[in-house]
Image 1 (tube, rainbow, N blue to C red):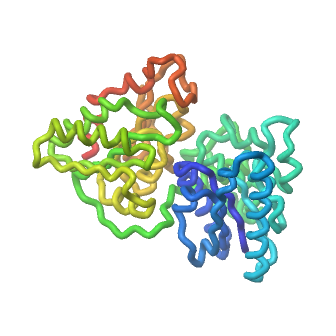
Image 2 (tube, helix red, strand yellow):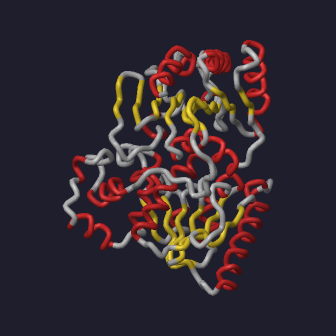
Image 3 (spheres, helix red, strand yellow):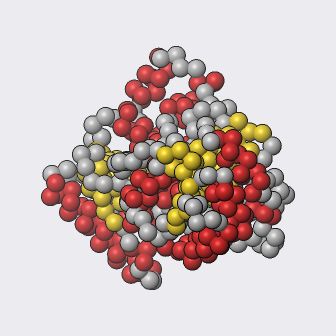
Length: 389
């Protein structure tokens, strides 16, 4: 069976899609995947016997509506040419993880039996005319879905065979006691939710874990509002380095200047025997994953690196500001313990302060105080890291 997946645009979202891919593989062991995504999302995969072809979608860089339309049509044509040349003919399923017009238009021009994706937010949208098997947009949102991972696996309502649901029911699985059972969802959704597995890294990993090596990810592509205060990162790094932790700072090209400032400030305050590296902008995604896998602990914002850390089964602290922690917390198939401002997902601890202005979901604090991040203190973070060591 050949399945085309249009990947999300964000790194973290793509990591959170991996349980859906794993569930498809479990139910349809012979499934082969073709992926379409931007250079960032596709960097989490390599072509092999499972992911037989990867297409880079850079049509978003085209300026102007009609130029992007033409580029989208050209991409669809290249995928159809691949289908013809490889002897596939058409896809059995096309799975669209994005909620925009261009992704729906692209996939509707690609030869397939079924095109699955979320329908429009409102009744006046046109996506429903481009998708053969639309899944109701609201069915993938709170309260029916309680996490981004489940929102993606919810798309499988239109893909998984009835035999999958029948087999789960025959197995007498106790759905009601499962950590991800949702009383607001229907039976089919709850079967999918309770069978959705952990995050997975599909790239090869060639490194081994080292004790007291700490990964720090101070940035967040979404915007400034998601970032813990620079001076808090500096204080935390200095305190932990003085306690014997080795530190690695990670970040993308857009975060080089900020992370360099953090790194230099720390060097000024630390003895020469303290071990601290700044790898910002110096790693590919493959290199980032191998390097992070050497680390035993992690501190970061709500970002792609955080979900990579969780997929690598690292312990650590995740700092949440303007976005709903329940929706994007470190994913777990186990029960998440919630106590005051803390979410305990396996060995990852998420922190989010309860404020009346949250979650604003803004890229910059509209109230100018940034208290959602300012009120999370280095004392809290250092204390949790020491308890996890």
